[in-house]
Amino acid sequence: MGIQKENGSLEDLIAKAGGCAVVDGGFATQLEKHGAAINDSIWSAVCLIKDPDLIKRVHLEYLEAGADILVTSSYQATIPGFISKGLSIEESESLLKKSVKLAVEARDKFWDAKKRISGHGYNRALVAASIGSYGAYLADGSEYSGCYGPSVGLAKLKDFHRRRLQVLVEASPDLLAFETIPNKLEAQACVELLEEENVQIPSWICFSSVDGENAPSGESFKECLDLINSSNKVSSVGINCAPPHFIQGLVQKFKELTEKIIVVYPNSGEVWDGRAKRWQPSKCFDDDKFKLFATRWRDAGAKLIGGCCRTTPNTVRAISKVLKESPGR
Ligand SMILES: [Zn+2]
Image (cartoon, rainbow, N blue to C red; front, top):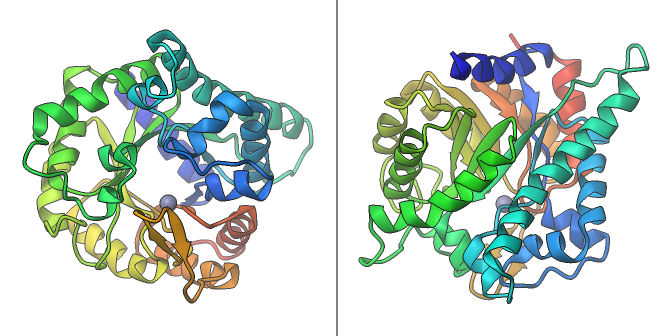
């Protein structure tokens, strides 16, 4: 029954938000804006070590902008990644827990202040612990190609994800967010782990997409979603960190393939060069376009909408405002 109750909390939030809740936006982008140096193999996770207050500040900025769900700073935080920086296993695990703690503290602080004011228009946010794909840990761009090579099988992917999942679950986030999953095998690893570990916290599994049609590996979303549909541990499924112009078509596709809650949080449309580790300039999808498209994604069936890389609190403010102003059908 625990699962039902937890599932209810995500559904309650969506209902309270008027049928579509707002996920926060790019994390590293905002850390950089505040001067954090995150050009590192563990990317924004480096801030967990060097500047936890800044992480909290970014969470608060997204709450103020109208985010109903905060995604934690653990996307590229992994135990082997921290160990490669010279940390012990204990220190690594405590940093993972800290990523959840910082988001929970920011949420509680914000909500304690808001709930005293009537008609503030905010919802009590949920905290989703980010679990980046194996490719995100490799930091070689493979989360956008889906090519892990022949030596990476199901067992290896499960081994990679298991301990971090256990540690994050111990920190009691409201949700688990598997992000930028590039292929069916890794989705299977996540689904099987949730079962094996008997995880009671609802989760979402988000894929990236580089062609707007399929998972980055080239496998069809039908194959991937058929697998996820068979698990009641997964509440929600969707797309993150794909370009925004793919999203409407993908929401329509997912709507036909699953009964689960659909979540989308695209990047800004700029192109990440995973090898060079920088953003290639391209025609940017600005906040006004996000505003226009967020209602289309909602009308197509998405119930959780936000932004990923290169989106900012202004993007989230625009999404939140337009979704509140024009309630869904
Ligand atoms: Zn992203």
